[in-house]
Figure: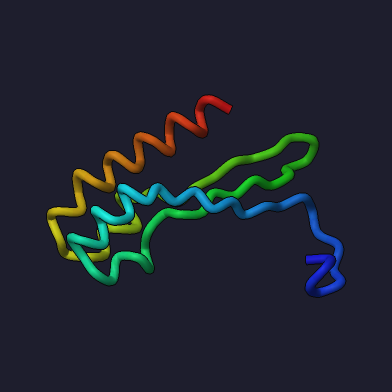
Length: 87
């Protein structure tokens, strides 16, 4: 924010967390799912602590009526959950 808008803002980072293998599987099942892939994770300051958050892939992909995405979204959710809990 400081560099682009000259605004002071709390510590906030958007990290790219795309898994190419899983993204390819999702795109092979549904060509426009790229707009809904959970490829970003945020890390932000919250008081004296930091918070890590990611979108729930099951929720984000449920807007597309394609049953092939369900198991894939579940796998991505589990991977994100494990990473976040390990921090």
